[in-house]
Amino acid sequence: MGSTSLSPSISLSPSLSPHSSKFPNPSPNLFLRSHSSFTPLTLRSNQTRYRFKKLPSSNAPNFLVAASAKAEPLKVIISGAPASGKGTQCELITQKYGLVHIAAGDLLRAEVAAASENGKLAKEYMEKGELVPDEIVVMMVKERLLQPDSQQRGWLLDGYPRSSSQAAALEDYGIRPDVFILLDVSEDILVERVVGRRLDPLTGKIYHLKYSPPENDEIASRLTQRFDDTEEKVKLRLRTHHQNVDAVLSVYKDITVKVNGNEAKEHVFAQIDAALTHVGEQRKVNSGSVAA
Image (tube, rainbow, N blue to C red):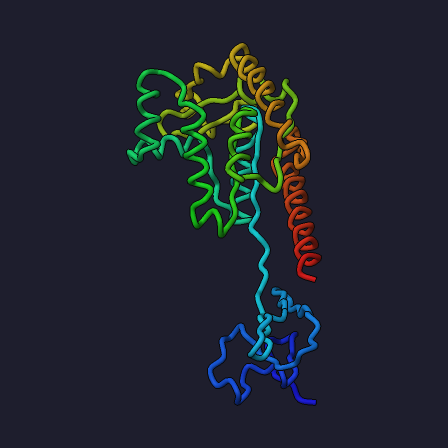
């Protein structure tokens, strides 16, 4: 029996053909059949699942609607202590997965510069030397996550939320990641990374005396150290970080993936890549079981 081709790997019987003479102007996603005892079925191509189901009507033929089901884009939160390599891993993740990278600090500065309503509110606190209240920052993050590019491509939320209250606020807005990645780096390595950092004030490039030394003596002579990149201050920052991240983990404990951040950046990314690949595969399986 002949068939009408829908795609290289899907075919429909003539009775489902969209070119039937009874329906000269069919919708490309609508196929008609006047059979009262039709069992819903699912057709699969390489990329798309087509689900047919009968729409009830008392005086008209039964209609079968074919709708494509596309997997939702990834939603990821990444957290890590100062000098954990979070910035490097965010670059690698966005390069491979095309996610929208959203850092709360950058977002806050951008909103203030744009003089948005949230930015104006935040600026009032910043000018007084006060911390911007959680509700303002959460609102900024929420609105950014709901923008079209984030919804279509997926998002990578960097270093936020930093407290259980911030995490709870995102949950209240219905915003929840598929996976929470935690870069786990030992304290002695973190201290070494921070204390050895140096800034070239001429180019803005960051060096490390051990891991990424300057190219020549001229550059080395002008390098400076940030005032808070001392062992005493970095240990204080680490204590604060660990207290905050423990609270956040209580919200995301069922979707947390701890990654060994002590290794080289390529090995760290391999762990993250494996975790994100696993999440993507699981979502495909779950999507298929729902459509079947």
